[in-house]
Length: 287
Image (tube, rainbow, N blue to C red; front, side):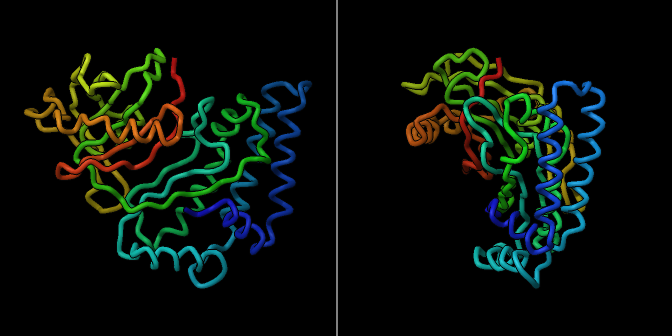
């Protein structure tokens, strides 16, 4: 985890903190001013967002000094110096029962350690895209309180990926919903690929109902080794269930719900039959 304090260190080491605070305060000021027309608001905020992204872009984050060196030392410590990495956003106020910030900032997959610091900056910059500003503002969250953090994980090469909701996010029924598709989870959670959907009894693990999607495509690692691409699924597999009975095991999901005392939205991947939990967050109702 590249913490919110690491971001503050980055600003301080580059002498950018005062300018950063001034820009974010100006954005909050515009959002709080009812008299400004929506079009004028949008234009002024867009200009300020470009300024804050440029501020971050031009700051130095290098492997030989300061917080950049400390980040790379941690990569070495955890044995990730030769690994392919995923780099995604986190932070204070992300993913509560009232709001899910998934998609508000960028995620980068199959990042090499040599490129890591560059992509950490890209994730920081992506906190200051218009979609994130509008989402936070709709939920009455001041921009000044937004503290960007970044999660760095070893890539998990999933043959099948999916999401387990321990409460139905559409109807709020007390039933487990599992959505799964071939390839990496990026395709499933973004809606890029069709999926299978299973409704599972929380008490005995029996499948109540299911829908098998026409899974024509999947997201995989790009042949270049950098990033991802979309590939066609073999015809024989498109209409076949991507999960078997052994995969539909609710014990871990229920344990996570009990641990956090909240309904959970759990991302998982399956590699060579092994199911791994990649992350979990509170369920945000869709309907």
